[in-house]
Length: 427
Ligand SMILES: O=C(O)Cc1cc(O)ccc1O
Ligand SMILES: [Fe+2]
Image 1 (cartoon, rainbow, N blue to C red):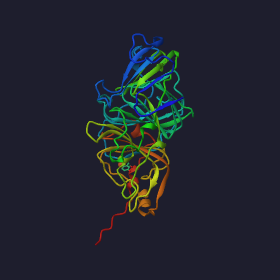
Image 2 (cartoon, rainbow, N blue to C red; image 1 turned 135 degrees about the vertical axis):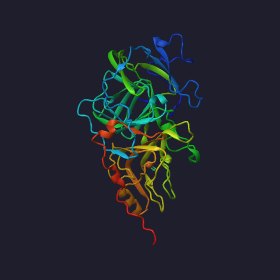
Image 3 (cartoon, helix red, strand yellow; image 1 turned 180 degrees about the horizontal axis):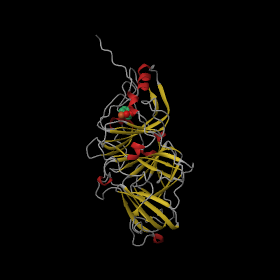
Image 4 (cartoon, rainbow, N blue to C red; image 1 turned 30 degrees about the vertical axis):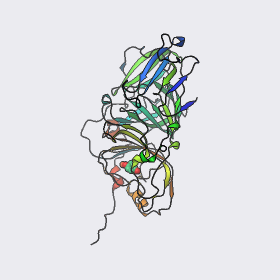
């Protein structure tokens, strides 16, 4: 399976020679009787540099379906968040247990945190998936936002309308809003995170004085070439729409796009390609230096969602407390860990776990990390074998009922900041 490098480039690809019209989008009779369909990710009138759309040439129009009915499965996926007053508590979870029964990616999705209503076209939700069977004769489509898949355990194959994406822990993939797909699990079991962005599309951040290169470079994003399946018989299509799940039965696989062109398409990215930038003098920079993707809000500089990476890297700062400092922010921080240990949390934050430090919550290094980093010899030191991430949002997150009540929620997270010695002022 091959991929085309670049971020949001205009691509033209066909799985059958002659399927893609030349020089026009909507010929009177597309080749082979294919149906031409425009697929938009932004308003028609969005500024040119933000405008994202593709033209799909498919075996049947995606309009060919009956009425959707409420979907009875995936009880933990998009159940809504608790509406009681939200205490200003920090929250943390151990990795969620793998399911005992056969469970595919969609039924294995547990929504943990969300903010805003998908109908606002703002906000972001954080889900965790645990799955052990392939999606067979079953597809999923999210009308509520683009899906950033962050595997933590086991490979994922995403068979999407616009091509096939293979990812493993250490890689991420993005499926745009409205792209139908099904997921296969080559390792039999998989766990990971999904950031669902209801707001403006994720893009690469501005680089300012960093210059023309650095952080995630556009050439390292990979978009799959056209791929399709021509399958008949009963197929289920589950849709997430305005915060609820719906199902419809089709008489064919909806993954029937034979050719497409445009700049709205899924991609994958290898996190090892991230060009991490940090201090070579003193002080720990703000975590915005680690931004891989950003979804701006309407307020300049205040992200609807930032996807931020904390990769393995060298720490060389002189006369500096090197891990993240103590802080309280107006932004809200959901964090996950793909591999290794996170430098601000010596204890209790396991790969596959999740934490939430919401609006103005005091947080930072736990006691053990603070003790270690305050007394460490400041020779150059490499933080190895780690990859943490943050989904930072200007909208405070609310947990779901499941997130609050599940056995994996740590009852004693506040203890991470217990036992700090009092400062000793001169008498
Ligand atoms: O809270 C965290 O661990 C995330 C974080 C990391 C960092 O390097 C600086 C600030 C920050 O919020
Ligand atoms: Fe933080």
